[in-house]
Amino acid sequence: MFWLPSWEADFLIIGSGIAGLVAAYRAKEYGSVLVMTKERAQDSNTEKAQGGIAAAIDEGDSPFLHLEDTLDAGAGLCDHDVVEVLVTEGPARVMELVELGVRFDREGSEWALGQEGAHSKRRILHASDTTGWEIARTLIQECRADRRITLREGCFLVDFLRDSHTGRCVGAVFMDSLTGELSTCRGRAVIVATGGAGQLYQNTTNPAVATGDGMAAAYRAGAVMMDMEFVQFHPTALSLKEAPRFLISEAVRGEGALLRNINGERFMPDYHQLAELAPRDVVSRAIVSEMLKSGSDRVNLDISHLDLERFRKRFPNIWRTCDQYGVDLNEGCIPVAPAAHYIMGGVSAGKDGETSIPGLYACGEVACNGVHGANRLASNSLLEGLVFGARAAEHARKFIEEHSTEPDLFGLDLEERTPDWDVPWAKVAEQIRLLMWEKVGIIRKGNDLAAAVAELERIRQHYPKRPASRRGVESENLLTLGWLAARAALMRKESRGGHFREDFPQRDDRYWLRHVIVQR
Ligand code: SIN
Image: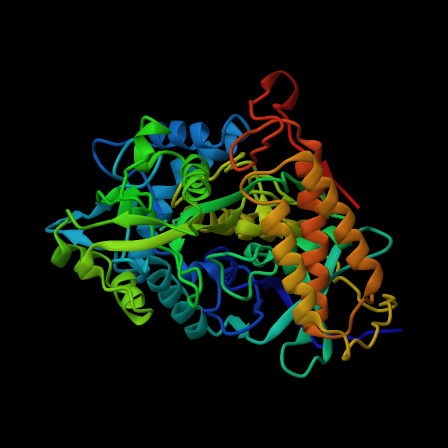
């Protein structure tokens, strides 16, 4: 089948979170930019980010200290050079956001800096508890206002297109999110910034759009994937029967909130010297252990000893949302439990976002560039999108200069897709999420992981391989990524960062100070 591109641009950018928008804002200086996004521009994990963005801007802080904290959290698997880029370029990029109009909170003439787990300093810039919303608002406004950038909403990434002679990524296939109609888009450089895959899990803080589309499409296209076993579970998501797992920011513990089991006992000091501000994986496992002991589906975040008026002003969104679900914070207690939050693994990328496919760049959560290692330090992800989105745009510019020939979509053979209107995709996705939560979750063991791999393979046999509907492709993506995560977790016979094996509870640096790398 021959395809004429429906759209074309010098820079094809997929995703409208912080990484994609920053890449677009940079790339516009060098050529035409097309940003394709699955739903509305603001529907991303960026918009949901509460706590803030980490940057060593305080006099008593330094990029070196930020680097040390990031490496510690990453449990031996960070790439030192990439982290160095993050912490040294980060402060300048953050100040560029301020120049663009992002309104971070201040205390008098100083920045109001928050504290989060495993940071040795207060270094989290925030805009009350809606930091991501404020950043997204500013960047979307800037991108919409610039005639060099076209922002197309409702365009769901299906697959990347590669030139069969050179292997270069020359564009992508999209599906209209509403009608299901397919189109192709040509790009002289393609930057994928589609975010993570939190929807792999039954309980997640992520929005519905986080189905790992960019990761799965990159894997199908032959990109190298790395560290898929490392998933971060946020310790404190709202835990109520009828409510979504709304994030209760780590900044709440940074302001002094205490975790208590349902018998009212504070437990974190028994698990780690940093107590409530220990690394997230430690806090999540401690909570699970307390929940198991008490037979409860939650623990409580105690804020009763804090100045509640001040709390309400600092966390208005949390206050409002709890209220909406019937939790009156004047009573000083928030029911919480862990939920999937962030995937450290993804498309293997260098410090300029370059992937194993020429012409394809990855930045933000979709990428695995070694900045987070086995466990991401809180509030480093907005910073990652900011720093590496800009770098990907710069490198893509060089790529375009060096590859002046127009990529050609003529003659690309796109396989037919199978009609799948009668497949109960919602049920399939639910099955995958439950399986991942129960068997590839916070506490893992070999038998469960092997059973998850087998079950995912069994599910796959039953359904069309190249479904024609958006829900079908999303489910296919979840199946692929769940399988990659479960297999990598089965392979890694140790515990490290976000990956905990009950049957191998120790960290094993002798054998496992290495990445799990996979390519189709
Ligand atoms: C939070 O506010 O706790 C989330 C911040 C993050 O995940 O980096």
